[in-house]
Length: 210
Ligand code: B1M
Image (cartoon, rainbow, N blue to C red):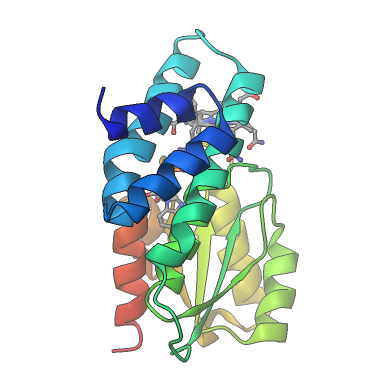
């Protein structure tokens, strides 16, 4: 087994300590953080998703894996981010109301931070009114809304509608994303952008300041 397969296997077995140590070792050996992410961690998470879908594993096992994934992402974070750069702007990010999935959101946050944008993270299950309050408080340039469930995509629309009602819609650019979200849905709900993955999300965010 190569190192990427070992990393993927430890992730799938939900071993945060051993996983973090191996990711650290791989970084120390000079492997790019992005390669570890794309070639080991994301495939590992996809394998977990497939087994979850087939009812081979259940929510507790997936939660354990998710914790391990977040531990590995924390090890990668400094390498994914650019150190010591003055923030070029501010973004707000959250997973919308009713939705507890945070791995993709955390990844998008890290990649955006890596472009020199300061990111304020409102966490998961974030109601529209909390986003409205945070836009008033932090005056961000960009609002990023993540949704992983077909049932919570509607909360992306509700959040945009709440910003409109508060007269704040035109003060920010809004990006939506998450596995079930599409460009057509983003257009329908009046978002400024849909991006399919964390790298494209970061590119779009950075381009807002070009
Ligand atoms: Co959940 N879950 N889950 N789950 N879970 C999915 C999403 C699901 C597809 C699994 C399946 O059936 N195959 C399914 C959704 C079906 C649907 O609606 N279409 C599902 C379900 C049904 C549920 C529950 C309802 C299960 C239950 O209780 N019966 C429940 C809902 C809880 C809730 O949110 N209210 C639930 C619970 C959970 C756990 C808590 C156990 C756990 C989450 C833990 C956590 O996040 N801390 C969990 C997990 C881990 C998953 C899977 C296995 C993995 C998700 C993940 O982290 N992927 C997932 C199956 C899968 O995706 N294969 C599944 C890795 C991550 C890097 O990818 O999040 O897609 P992703 O993010 C990507 C892109 O989407 C994009 O960039 C990221 C990286 O490139 N992106 C953005 C994400 N946000 C973005 C925002 C942007 C731009 C891009 O701009 C703002």
